[in-house]
Image (cartoon, protein in one colour):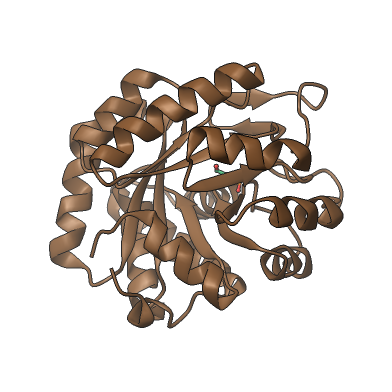
Length: 287
Ligand code: 13P
């Protein structure tokens, strides 16, 4: 069943777990995510970034989500990840997305607030939830790159004002995670997370979920993270499994390769669903 993301996030917030949110790129990884979500009875958020939209196109993404409604019992939201182009945001609304992230984090604060509020206004009219971002998360997510020196952690003092002025439904916070893989062990600023948590009641989102040691991810969830975003680990599972398979034999049919990739992505998805404590939660969620 497709739903907006807010009921999922609210349930996670009330019960102390996080909704796993996965970047997908095509039919293979989309099916992998849904298959495991169904097996684990876990709510999931399927995230398409703007570069996935450029790759696959809105009509195909919309059609895949519609097919999933017929083919799968999984409870999911379809989410635009790091939406920056207003054109894409309007198209997402038209093409069956149920959740949108407007990423104005690279803009001056007043502009981030103004545009986030505009997106919220449009999205709420049609029952779509909006995630905003305050502070900037370093690293590379698809084609969005934020250098270490441009990145800035979320200032707790700005949180209540940002949420009140924009009316976002969820807030992505920068507390030391990064998009992509980490060079060493990431250092998460849990004091900052606790301070942010005190400033607002909206569900908080942690980006850069790939490569965070399990104990740190679990601590972040205990301290109030309700959505954990994971992209790179799925991409590595997908491409790594194909690379290894190709090295072993000559390929003249993509299907066995893509089956191997689907299995590899399923493994990575299962691990994250369990890490988030999301298994078995879907049946308790009313949408
Ligand atoms: P990773 O690619 O580091 O897992 O981050 C994913 C993400 O935060 C998507 O918004």
